[in-house]
Image (cartoon, rainbow, N blue to C red):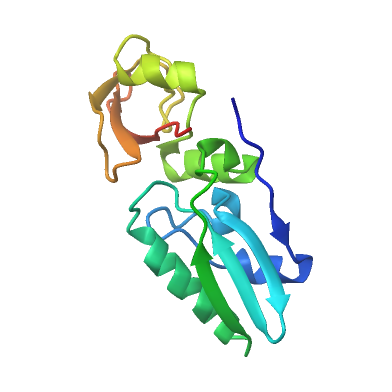
Length: 167
């Protein structure tokens, strides 16, 4: 079951939020990651609510500081808070974000069932981000960060990260 992302974002704040990037995957804005739950003016302060990609994600403090600094750069005060429920899911990554991941060399998350099959080594369905082959193998269930797994293409021999499906 997929939980629909309900966002309450003032459209005039989106250009600023799109300039804030995930520190672990700098090609993705926090908007592309789907972590921004709301962004609204309250009096003279922009209040931004974000959802961590997983519990204890160390990038959230950096993202919070980056949001405050992005608004500070345009002389607007911002306050950031975390929203833990509903939990973030990879379904919230935008299509633009998925394309940016692939171009960056990180395979975008599969659906939940396919993800399990790939991570248990049962199926060769994670496509190489270099050559596009599905002749890939799981090297490690943990890649450069906890939310990624390390794969290698058996055709072009390139290693690459796969962004795990999180529900």
